[in-house]
Length: 122
Image (tube, rainbow, N blue to C red; front, side, top):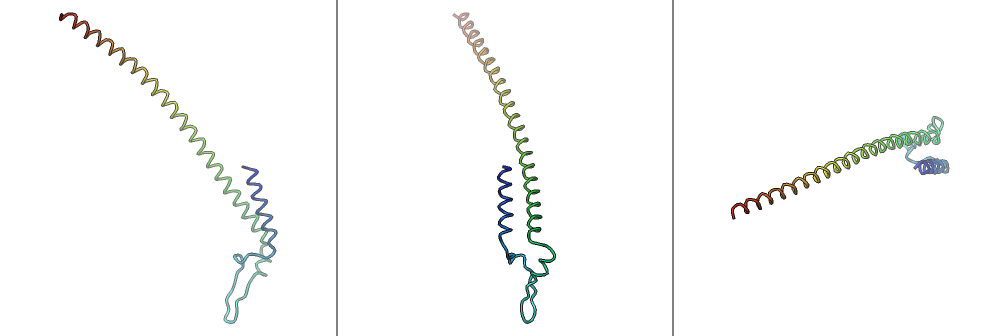
């Protein structure tokens, strides 16, 4: 999992660095009466796109870490739930076996009493 995350981060960084021109999404445009002026020069002086992508990657890494912690917590809770269910099923099975033995014993006692009553009536 960690290797996959590292691979994805590296491939994302390489793809960002390979793009020489900034994306149209990040360009700020101002409309005037005569024409449209792109403000890419001012934005490039303020912040480089690589630094923005590093911050994005850092925030994505935090999100993935939070998700991993959440899934780990869910996994632990599921494991505890599964163990409790298995324990309950074992206890239920033991109770059912004991009750089955009691029922068979009672059936034998009832048959013997019935046989004794039939023997007395004859």
